[in-house]
Amino acid sequence: MNLFEEQNTDTQAVLTQDQGLLPPRESSLHLGGAAQERLFLGLYNRDALPHAMIFSGPEGVGKTTMAFRLARFLLKHGKEDEAQDHLFGDAAPKVTPETLDIPSDDPVFSRVASGGHADLLVVQRAFDEKKGRFKGALDVETLRKVEPFLRKTASEGGWRIVLIEGADTMNLSAQNAILKILEEPPANVLIILIAHKAGNLIPTIHSRCRKIDFSPLSSEVMEELLRRHGFTFSQEELETLSALSAGSIGQALRFAEEDGLETLFQIYKYLAYMPQWDWVKIHKLSETLSPPSQDKAYKMFAMLFQWVFRQVLFAKARGHNSLPSYLKKSGLETYLQKSSLENLVKTCDALQTHFARTEFSNLDRREAVRGAFALLS
Image 1: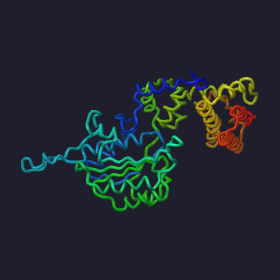
Image 2: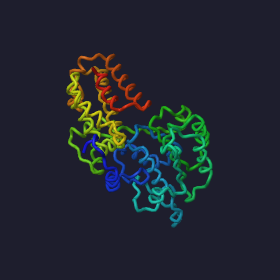
Image 3: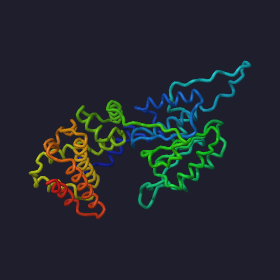
Image 4: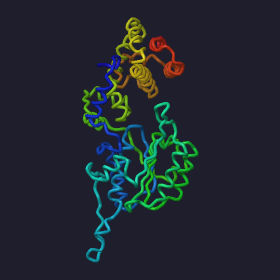
């Protein structure tokens, strides 16, 4: 089944459940974060954990999963067992854990997963019931729950932890509210700001937090995570998917579940005729993508169509006369060589404007598909 055919969403939901696509607070698996884990263990074992950190990196590379992983670890090990102290007149030696792992059957793991741990506060953007989606920004009203939470004594005598998801969406008032807390934090407190675009945070927040960078996942990690979620790809497909998702397992899973690779390879077939388009096939494609039931299919097509030409532009900007291997089948090698950088910039801008106008003005999607090819003529 490709993306141009109607999809069975009920079946997809079952597959998602059976394949264990767990949200970060319930996931015991974290691949690709070995360097960050070593850093956190070293800081913990030296009693040098900062009171605030910024987890920065592209969306879908494991920042939130690692934040919950570290939170579980501290909530489990953050309090020394006083019953063992001075048993024979001397304090018991401090245990130095070598991993952040907490078994999934541990009570701490269960309480974090269910959202029921009294010493963990997770802050997210408010959900707009009318629009059926999360609001675009974290506002100051949402952030006001942080200060009273931190003033309380930890229920288990250890750490109190705050995870702020989408911290880069905080408006200025919200950032100033968090800044006041960061300036005079209570003892045994950890605040983790999770940001896809850390540059959106004001400099004074940066100056009071330790920044932890998360890089795009390697193709080996991507392959393993995709396999664990029930997807198997050839090396060529995996390379294309890694480039398409920019090393984000979240994006890679989206493309895998919505047949993004199949859509991309279909686009390559149409582009092979450039600039002598097969208008009969293009008209059929436009009719297929136009019904409301094909909303996801159309949006995937529009996004990937633009992505292809952005990759051509990037290749030209880097001074390359040949396309990366994942674009070889697009048939755009000659187009790359003959086009100037200026013209490629204009083409990408024109395509972006074209699809954005269609979406904003709710125009006929059949004309949007046909018009995209006409722009390239």
